[in-house]
Image 1: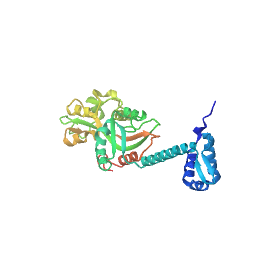
Image 2: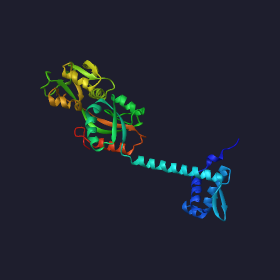
Image 3: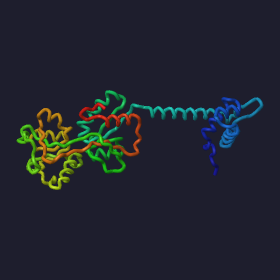
Image 4: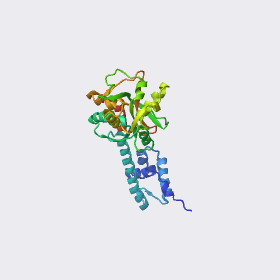
Length: 311
């Protein structure tokens, strides 16, 4: 079986041929490449062995290339030029500050926080474009794991060790009632009172629901099964509309109802001895390759307030 030795020619051997042609002598070519003359000669000899033909004619008149040497010299210049172009593009990519970022986000941050944050971000970083896919926290996390998106913003800390989670913003669930509900002027209600009222809740997989159930279990006294559940809805907007229309009451993120509370469409009623708080998290794979524009984005959202976005 014949071995194709041509494939073992190295870039240094090709560069030695180029230097030899440019300088016209082995001593000057060696100096140009920061090699000893024997090392340069060895590079030329190895290239000739791999090609299977003489590449250089040596005479008292100087250095000339054989027909095989001329062919290899022409291709050597192309190879080295391509190598240098690749280097320039890689270096340019490292310095690049513009690019596209693909995010998944659970309902609350996707609907009520990120639009404000990103509007401010765009004022100074117009070259960085953000694309958001909205889902519940579980689905948003799976999008990151499946490489469907690069990063995610969700309302619960993932347990999967493949992911890194960095706390971003605080959130608080508040009990809200409609403007004509009898509780709207109450200073607080007890949990037994709450259990009797028609209650609308988010769907399974929602971080809002998970947080509500977590605090019920933490109390060791109450569970979701004891509630008078009259509806299970797939978004915070649907929950708000259900409460405003009088279908039931609900516990929802304060970020989702800040406008309705200010406008008097909804009223917050504290639950005695019951505070429900959480963090929103930025998640990404531990091995994620951060480019400069990713770092700019992450630094911004980690240092801004959802109420006052400017970082």
